[in-house]
Picture 1 (cartoon, rainbow, N blue to C red):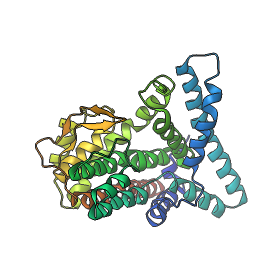
Picture 2 (tube, one colour; picture 1 turned 90 degrees about the horizontal axis):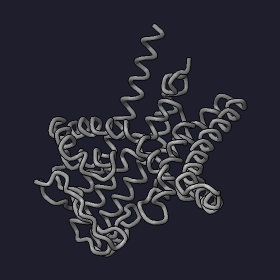
Picture 3 (cartoon, rainbow, N blue to C red; picture 1 turned 60 degrees about the horizontal axis):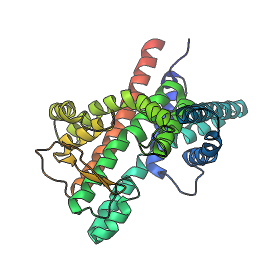
Amino acid sequence: MTTLYLLTDEGPFVFGAAVLLDLALGDPESFPHPVRLMGRAITFFEPMLRRLPVSETAQGAILACLLATAAYALTAVFLTACFHVSVMAGWIASITLLFQTVSIRCLADEALGVKRALEAGLDGARKRLSRIVGRDTKMLDEAGVCRAAIESVAENFVDGVVSPLFFAAIGGPPLAMAFKAVSTLDSMIGYRNDQYRRFGTWGARMDDAANFIPARLSALVIAFSASLLGLSRPGPVLRGVKRDGRKHASPNSGIPEAAFAAALGVRLSGPAWYGGELRQRPYMNEAARPCRPSDIPKAIRLFVASSLFFAGCAVAVSLIFRTWTIS
């Protein structure tokens, strides 16, 4: 019978150590990150697959399946080789790979960088914000910059923390790395434009499916973390998610965004420019006040606390279950 990775001997230690390593190091640009390699692979294989005598949707499906499968298989083979060298080598490799699927420190630093840039001037803040959001930032006012930064933190809580740890808990670093491959596909080719409307369909749908359960878990995690921080009680946050979570174009992104809006007592989403086109998005927590610069550090604290709460609960449940089964 297959055992969940978090219930194996190394699972809880690797899980916890990877999160702590991410908090300590973030995403060093000099370090060879697997996601960058995945991005290069997509760029390299896309023109080749587009020449296949099948539909664009089928071409994109082949790319999506190949990349996710390769990410899982190569990670599994590499870890197997490391464990053949020694158990310690296997554990170190597992921690190193898993930590690269998580993005707590990096996103927190980027959002804090927007706050600091905003203190120096709006133009610099707009430029810094463009590093973490896909919308046009040149016309944003102060409230718009703050709102976009908080939305990025909220949405990436699922994609950058809950989902990779969720899949790691099930299948270890190989499954977490396969998820990152799907996430990378969505971020690079999952666009609804003429170039990728069909070619990126599978990448986008696979990402939606992969994030479906983690996104809904995130609402509970954010609600209880907000309570621990004294920001809001769980009830209002969960009611906000029920009211606004489906307003987002994505079936998943609206859930953490609605939770953050309710927990922080701010208004998120709303109209935004993308590629020179104004998209009329509905507001989340519409009756609340606009975002202020002081809300960005609060959002970061909620993001980090939620990340630690989720990881801590997963490890605790694992250890309790293992102790109970052994006894």
